[in-house]
Image 1: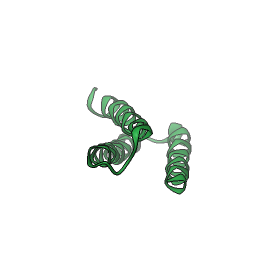
Image 2 (image 1 turned 120 degrees about the vertical axis):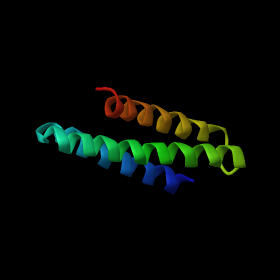
Image 3 (image 1 turned 90 degrees about the vertical axis):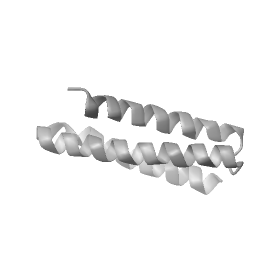
Length: 82
């Protein structure tokens, strides 16, 4: 479990750096980046939710569900409202 949390943190850090450096992107490139992040976070949310309901993860695993949901909701907001 510890390894999985570390891998989750590493990938989240990578996404954060990519997103932070995106301030020089064109509008089209930003929309593609946000769409990619939205799809990744939405799939992560579904997988985390399935893991919780199947009993694979324990009670603290709900934090993954919440984190993925918030990230997907934020990216979805910026992707689909304009």
